[in-house]
Amino acid sequence: MASRIIVREAEKEDIEKIVPLLVRLKALNEEIDPHYKAVDNLEEAARKYLETLLDRSDARVIVAADAETGDIAGVIIYTLVDRIFYEPRIKAVITDFYVHPRFRRKRVGSLLLDKAAERAASDGAGIITAVYPAGNAIAENFYKSRKFVPLQVEVYRPL
Image: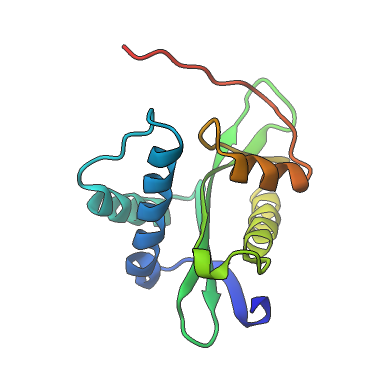
């Protein structure tokens, strides 16, 4: 299956195919952790989010597409952050990463991560990090298997 997959930067024409993946990701996050309560207009919010990201110079939306059908198999999104006090200064932060269940366990996630890391390096990033809900064992195991290590801890308190 992975041989039919093309990994590339998303285009505006891809938005409608990516929206369902983001909706699934946010719904999954809500299932994993009740502190991630999805908004009622999730589909609309995802669409606007993607439109905004595609216009930003400090963000990348990368998709894995089935070469035969054009279906979007997965998406990875990162933003560039300037760590003004640390070297390397620029880091790429993966904020959204989802592979459609039909394409899982076929190296699509690895292909997306590899492309994101390659693109982030060409954008000037010296490290790549990922954020995901605490308790997401799937994400934790995936990143551990790809040599990610803890960098910082984020805690919160509702107001």
